Image (cartoon, rainbow, N blue to C red; front, side):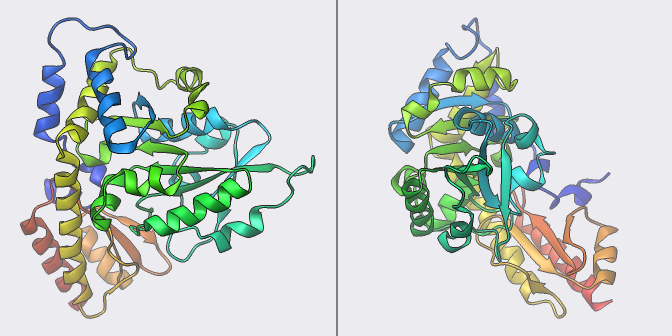
Length: 344
């Protein structure tokens, strides 16, 4: 498979950022205590507290593991999670939240991947009724699986509604940095300041080898997480290598550079795609994803040169993802291929 085939399939397809590889090599010097009792993990905690506030930080291996263990720590067996039907926990985690966390997912149809208080409200029912699962968590993705971004006001409205009903707000932040750059904000402004309770903070889609973190904004919620992480197979023995990656991303602003570039490439591609006859953007380009509706024949022609996800086969909607490694030349070449496929 050539590089061209893989360029826009996913930001997971991109390599690790060179600075991250250097950080891992740097963490390889000498001996260090295992399971997080090391200088890199300690520095990471301090740095994320600078960025996010008085938080509890737990490095993990991957996003699914982060989501599942975070939910496990705050849910009991009879409790449920309200999420968009497009949510990663609902669509792309092979039932792990149900099997491992034991959580019923109440998935809600949305127009753009974003929950609203109006969409959540009908599901805030049955409290105290032993015959009904009890809603406990509202979970959103930022940015969403459709490439859209919640504003701080939208997150705040969901948090207030959740808290008023005795629920928690969880954010799947696999692409949180892309959302922050899109909004021109810091990370705290779209999490702690909005009332978020639990965050799965992404790194792998932003140039790391494989590193995420679970962040609790209310320390009491983290009381049992050490055990949930261990039972969920997300406790790294040589945690310094996981923490070193996250520290590299967040210590000196590399996250802004990486997310800013990926978002810019998506905007460039979105603008080009919008100008192709017969092609329309299915959703606004607000982070690093471009969703475009194409004729079926054009999709098949593009597949000869590129790998990408057909998001909605009936509507002909495909997804292109941009990353820190995407170049303007890559984007322009895909745009030319898109025009040729649509014209043919």
